[in-house]
Each structure stands twice: as C-alpha cells, then as structure tokens.
Length: 180
Image (cartoon, rainbow, N blue to C red; front, side, top):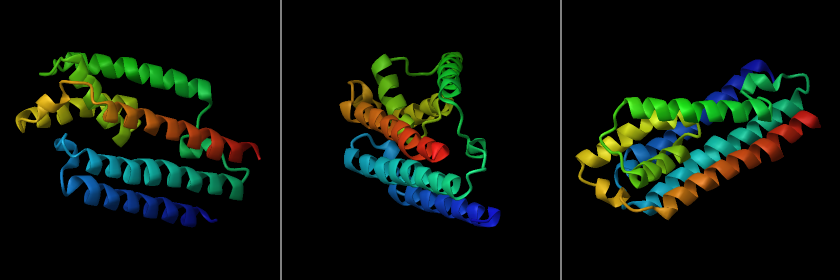
C-alpha cells in the first residue's frame, strides 16, 4: 500500500472512531450519567476497544506485513521495556499533576471509578489524570457524583479488560507482524 493509501486508511479509521464516539457518547453524554452502564459499555467496547484498539491494531499489522522494511516506530510501537518505563513515568507525573490541581473530590473510591472510566476512553495514562478532574467535576455539578462513592466493579472491570485487549493486540497482532 502506498503512503497515501496508508494515510487514507488512518483518516478513515479516525473518522469512524469519531463518528462512533459522537453517536454512542457525545450526543447522549453517556460519561456524565453514571446510571447509564449499558450505554457506557457499548460505547467503550465499540468505539474504543473494537475500533480504536482491535481494528487499529489489525491495520498496523497489515501495514507492517505489507512493507517489512517499515519502521514500527512510525506507528508509535516501542520496545516493551520503554513502554513500561513510559507508563510508570506517566502514572507518576499524572498523579502529581492531579494532586497539584487540588481536585475538589479526594475520595479514593471516586477517583478509582473516575480513572477507570477515563482509562477505557484513552489508555494514555497521563491524559487520564487530566481528564479525571473534568469528568468528576461534571458529575459533581450535575449532582450525580454520589453514584461514584462506592466501587463500581463494572468500571474497574471495563478498564482492566481494555488494557488486556490493548496488550493482546500489541503482542498477538502487531509484534508478531514485526517478527514474521
């Protein structure tokens, strides 16, 4: 596939993800309504796990197999040790960033639920700390923060599943394409 074809596939995938995000979350404000578990699950699975992780991973795999000389770094693929170091650093910096913001909500259970919700939306750890205050602030202002004062197993499980899918796609689809 030509460079222009690769860009077109990437743009089409981005447009599909954006459309799914708007239809399943933005239009109906799913993330601002904790009681909407089913809608949040559908949004997370369709937009972020299937389109944003699995389909994107399959596209990267296709590109790497079609052009074996292609540097995986072009797609942001890094060695596992570098990823572990980066995630650790992002977690530390994100935690510091959140603490320095002096969030209005300091309840650890509320923070866990909020972080779990934002992690599914974006597995970029530092971004999640920045988004956390916005999500929790919107819930507080809408009077719906109370729903987050107990551990929401569904949110935590969804976040864990999203990370598992991300790691699986990286190992099973992308890194195997780099070897073969």
